[in-house]
Amino acid sequence: MRQSIPPVTKNLLIINGLFFFATFVFMQTRQIDLRVILGAFYPESPNFKFWQILTHMFMHADFSHILFNMFALWMFGSVVEQTFGPKKFLTMYLLAGLGGFILFNAVNYFQIEQLKEAIQAQGIGLIQIYEAAKLSAEGTYHPNSIILSNQAASELLVNYITPMVGASGAIYGLLLAFAVLYPNEKLMLIFFPVPVKAKYFIPVMVLIEFYLGYQNIGNVAHFAHLGGGLIGFLLARYWKKNLYRRN
Image (cartoon, rainbow, N blue to C red; front, top):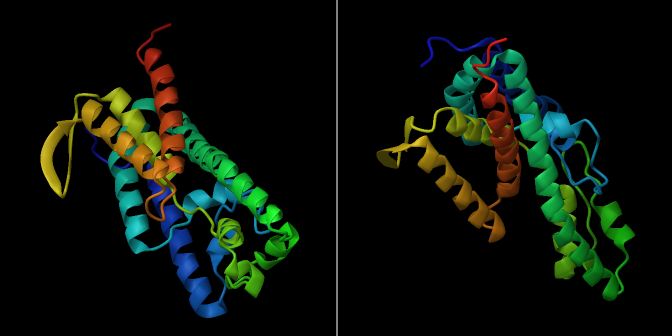
């Protein structure tokens, strides 16, 4: 279906690789954790900066994280870019990443508001948690004993100091776009080596993501995947209608 890596996909692979390499170098040489600066924090967190909405898409937690995402970007992104062209592909990639950020934080909003109400009802000042959540460049922070001994306060602190990193929201946008474009293309997983058509395979992955997110299983931003997937699906459906239209 493809012969070479198209330009935007290739450049995204390179940029993600450079960001990952820079993260390692800065930590080893300067004791600076770039994930604190470039990862996306909850907008109410003292660590949030506006540029993180974009830069978090190019940060990754570890080698396995970037390896999986870049493999998926190469595999599905190449096809989607060759189908829609570089401009629409880049637009989809960035909007899917943004959609992941929005849905993830929208879901977190309700949980965080409940935590804040519980904390205030126990007479703990939110400003204490806000101040304790301020991360240094190395990623250190200094909570007091009151916060650590209170479950709700500790959970709120974790929400304020944990950044969302990774291209997964954008990648899920490409996965859903691929399923829209090529529903009968067969895919399979390494641990489930049975070919399954994309129109069945990818929706099952989406349902699994929704279940894992609803159950809050694992240290993974499942709703970011779903937000990105939704954007990719909607854009692919809209653009596909005009894909072969002639003037």
